[in-house]
Length: 232
Image 1: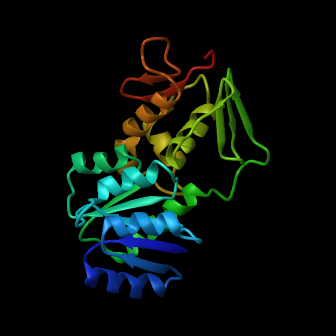
Image 2: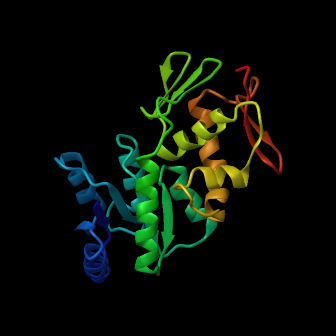
């Protein structure tokens, strides 16, 4: 795995390079957001994952995340001393895939890195699986979704949410079931994923043109979960 660490804490970078390197991760370290943006734009071999601190000199991590996500779906894990739910949602809201508050255990970080990369590049799909729900077509192996012939630009998390809803279109998928389904195969229920679902579903609705003024494509079943309406 190739990882890019963007953090101005050089001691942390040294520790992570040693630990992650001993577990098969090649870590490239940059200390500021502007340098990270240039690196990602010019890299001939882009990283498999970006570890991005929020509190950076110059361009902060949230702005770096926003700019990267506008042109790339590379998995992003936010690293920050801020642990409040509002800050976590801010990172997820602009496209981060996960959020690890400092201080953290390097073993936990490595586990989350593997989980995020597996979710972004699923290895085990149902052969040739294609899901048709009205004018929505989801080609699972190709990681592609179209609506009325228009391709949707989705993050890896949004795509996984859409796949699970499309597989069970017309039925209610509980929040816990959805949180488990978007984790790597066999992963346990993660309440932090549950709490971020509203953000991702909101983004998914927006990209599908589901603005609430007409019939909902994705219906919220209050206190239970979500349902993709079959007759969209």
